[in-house]
Length: 126
Image (cartoon, rainbow, N blue to C red; front, side, top):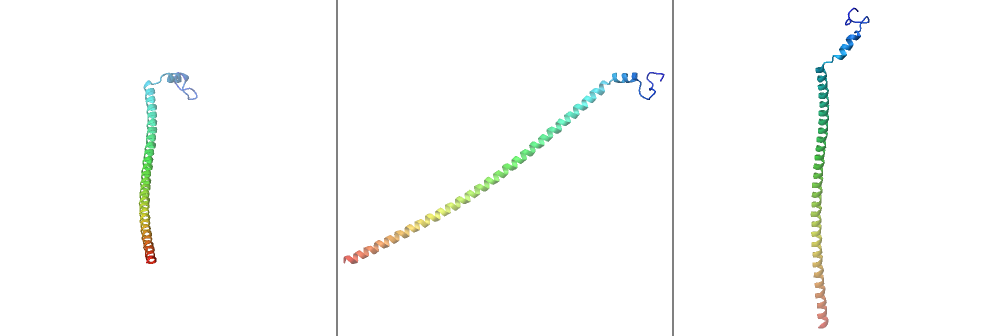
């Protein structure tokens, strides 16, 4: 190797060339590399934000479904309670009517018994 920039005997670059290459860094290349790294970081943050947004949307959908199911269950329970109340009211009305009839029948029996007792007293009195 007669010139310092010629390749060394083993084919490697001479040490002078290596030192020149190390010290001559292109500032635009550094800025571009930094910008690429910032872009990659921004993409990663955007992807993470999208994933979080998707997860939150899924939670909202699940909560809405749960609320809808709860409303349906509440409506069914309310319908069931209304039917039970109607059944109870009907049963109560039937029981009241039956009680009134028993009272009327008992009143008629008592009146018949009093008439019979009065008739017996009249016969004994005459």
